[in-house]
Length: 171
Image 1 (cartoon, rainbow, N blue to C red):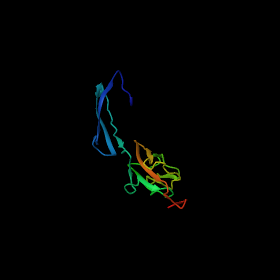
Image 2 (image 1 turned 45 degrees about the vertical axis):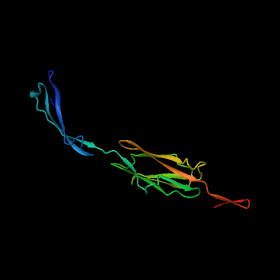
Image 3 (image 1 turned 90 degrees about the vertical axis):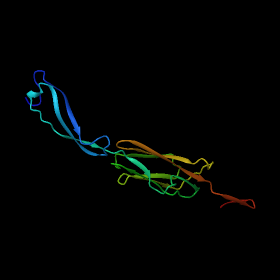
Image 4 (image 1 turned 180 degrees about the vertical axis):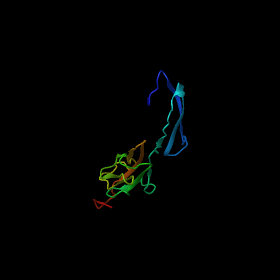
C-alpha cells in the first residue's frame, strides 16, 4: 500500500535539515528530510523529498532626498523642496501599501511601485499661525513582511509684510 502505514505502525519523529541558519540572510535554502523513526518503520521503504524555504527580507524605507528636506520650513506661497523616500528590500511592488498622512493643503504625494520611490511635493495653500508648530506628516508603508513609518515636518511661515504710510504690502 503506497503512502499508508499498516497495523498500528507509526512515524513518531524525523529530522529536517535546513542549509541556512538563523544568521543567514534572505534567500532560498534547501530543506532536507530524513531519519524517520517510530513503530514498524523498518517495514517500509521511506522516500524523502527535499523542499525549499524562501526567506524574504523585510522592507526598509529611507529618506533619499537631501538631508533636511524632511524637516523644512518655507515661506507661504513657495513650493517645498521635493521630499523623496525610497522603499528597499525584496519588494517594492504592488505588495506595498503606501500612505502619507498630515500633509498641509496643496502638498501631495505619489508612489511609484516600480522604483519604490515616494515623492512629496507641492505648494502649501495654508500657513501656520504659529511658525514654531510645523505640520507633522507620517509616511506609512505596509509591506510584504512588515509595517514601517517615518515622520517629518513642513513649516510654513506667513508672507512677511511691511506697513509704509498706512499701506500694508507683502515683502
